[in-house]
Image (tube, rainbow, N blue to C red):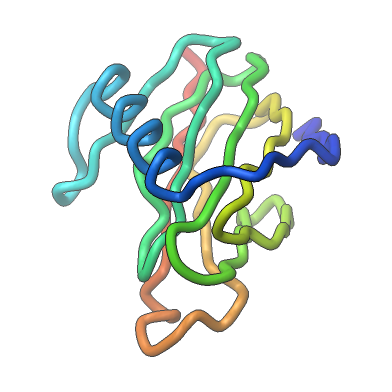
Length: 134
């Protein structure tokens, strides 16, 4: 809820972005799910997701009713960020950091799917965002 695609995007170096996401995941990691870190950042913190063949990484755990700046980028190909069942759809490109402000309004588990064909593992490219109300 209350997503605002604010047309904010920056040219970036993909390997620098990857390092930023890894630092973010290490700092805010609360547990793992099937070997993937689940990160729970504080409200107002910039939140980072990385698209790469064939995953969205890491898993996010966000607080209902709090605002976050969500950064999206790709390491390799153009990917689609489709947040279901919210029907948020954006294209994510390597070399660009796309930033949007999100304020979750409903608790639950949301799926991220790639909706831009990205190769043989495209059908496996998923991720998750947990929205908690505590």
